[in-house]
Amino acid sequence: MASTGSDVEKGKNMGQEDFTYLPPPREVFYREEGVKEKFIRKTKENPFVPLGVVITTFALSYGLWQMKTGNKRMSQKMMRLRIFGQGFTVVAVLAGVAYGNAGKK
Image 1 (cartoon, one colour):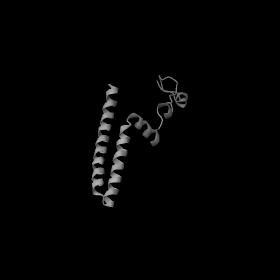
Image 2 (cartoon, rainbow, N blue to C red; image 1 turned 90 degrees about the horizontal axis):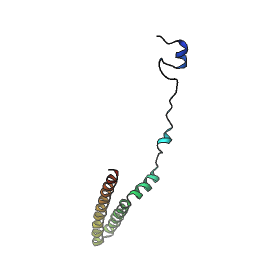
Image 3 (cartoon, rainbow, N blue to C red; image 1 turned 60 degrees about the horizontal axis):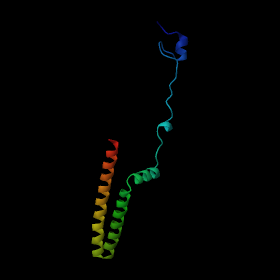
Image 4 (cartoon, rainbow, N blue to C red; image 1 turned 45 degrees about the vertical axis):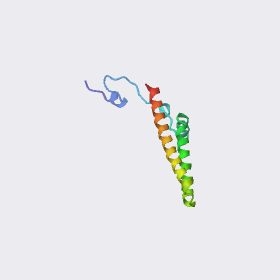
C-alpha cells in the first residue's frame, strides 16, 4: 500500500503514531562545572591533598631559596620536607580513591 501525497507532506509513515519527540535541554541532565566549583568540591571530598601540595610547594620554594643563598643545611632539611610532602600527597590521593570506591560498593 503506497503512501498518499498528503501523508508524506505531514511527515507520517505508515503504521507510526503521530507524535514528535524532542529531548529535554542539556541543562536538565547536568550543569557544566567551572574550575573554581570543581576545586572546592574536590577539596571538600579530600582536604588532605591540597595540604600536601602546599607543604610540597613551600618546602621546594624555600629550599631552593636557601640553596641560592648558600644555607646548605636548611636547604637539605627543606628537600627532605619536600619528599615528605610528596609522599603525604600520594598517600592522601590513594586513601581518597580507596574511600570513594568503598562507598560505591
